[in-house]
Image 1 (cartoon, rainbow, N blue to C red):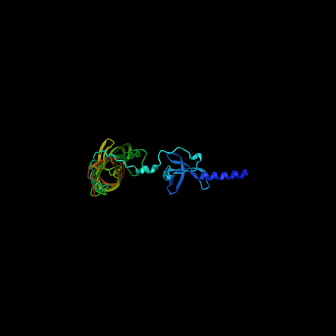
Image 2 (image 1 turned 90 degrees about the horizontal axis):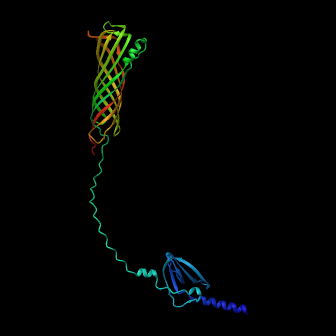
Length: 343
C-alpha cells in the first residue's frame, strides 16, 4: 500500500509541476513559440527552463541570433510552482527587440563642410609616338690602329723586321652622312694611315734603277683614302645601333725616306674600295635634336699600287705594291635627328 500511495502522489506532483510556472515567452526566427522561464540574458544568448511534454523540468540555451522576439510575464498564471521558476520578476514585460524597433530614428548630424576639390585637369588623348626616328645628318671622327695584310714570307732576317714595322701603323678618319630614312645614309668618308720603319741591309725595290737592292733604309708610308659611301643602319634600341658601310674611291700613297743617306720620295694613286661594320651608342638623351654618340668600327681597305713617281714621272712597277689593310678605330659622332613626333 505504501508503494501505491507513493506512486499516486508522484503522479499528482508531476501534473502539478506541468501546470505551474513558465510565464515568459521566446519566439524563434522560425516562428516557434517557447513558453519558459528566462533565467539569464547575456549579450549573445538566453538561458531558460521549460517543461517538456512529459512534464520534466529542463534547462536550455538559445543564441539571440536565432530569436525573433521575447517577452517577460506574457502569461498570467503559472504552470509550475517548482523553485526553479521562482526567480525575481524582470523590470519589463515588453520585448527589448520591440522596444528598440519602437524608438524613433535618431536625427543625423549635419555633415561637416568639406573643402571643394580642385578642378580636374583635362585628359589629353593618347598619342602614338614614332620610335627610333633618327633621320638627319651625322658627323664622325675616329682613330685607331691599322695593319697591312701583305704577306711577309721569303724575306731575310734583316729585311723582315723592317717590313713588319712598316706594316703596322696608326689611322684616323672622318665621315659625313645624311640619312633620308632611319635605315639608309649617303655621304663621304676619308681615312689616313701612316707607318714608319728603319732597317740595315734591307732588300727593297729601287724605283730609280727599277731593280731590287740591298741598303740601309728608312721609310715613312702615308696612305689616304677618300670616296663616297652608302651606310645601312639597324636600330637596336633608342640608344644603340649597328651599321654596315660600303665605299669606293681614290687613294693616295706617299713613301718618303732615305736610301742610306740619300733622301727619296715616291708618290702614286689608284682606285680602291672600303667596307666597314660599326656600332654607335648615344651618350645623350633621345628627345633632343642632336646628341653625341660613342663609335666603334672595324674596316678593311682594298688597294693595289701599280705605278709610282720617284721624281721622273710615273713608272710601272714590276709587281703591284699590296696596300690592303685592316683597321680598328674608336671615336665619336655627332648625330642629328628630329624630336619624336606623334602620329
